[in-house]
Length: 250
Image (cartoon, rainbow, N blue to C red):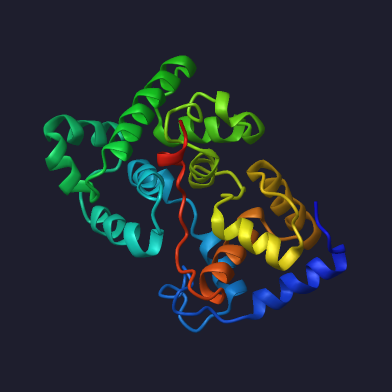
């Protein structure tokens, strides 16, 4: 899986952790003046907003498809956080009260693909609630996230929804309580360039990050954030963290 030794991998990981965030690093504005390692640790400690506002957490994942979170999604999420809605039922009520164009203006993008994904995901969550006889939004999503298998994501009840590729599948699991990684372009590029990862397979990339986490003692989420902030901040002409499965997956 790697063409570098464990010693070389850990050495390079520590070198990257000590580097400063740059203006294109994803956590630059939140952790101004901090190192990549400090920002990665701080950001993973802040995971958990999905418990209080699951609808916001869900929207954040879906808006991130095919978009750089910092450049295109964060401003919409910060705006939505100021509004008075939290639960999936709150979100469903908003959808019913607005026509499609009004909802586009509400959440940000005029994107039929993402709108359709949101509708399909909410319907599937309701199916899970009925199946498990559970009504708490976070508990349902956390149960799904803990039990979901990234090795078989295409047959998962949420993973098989058109437009949800493995990166979004993993992003959902991350946002709803699982210590894992989102194998997007930034992560896989950093794995290859810095650690000698020798595959284009996203499932293998997840396993590779989990392996580095076990080697180093850091959480998988921390390794994810280290790779993302290094890739976005220290590779030239590469500011984006993009997922394209919404438009590429048949």
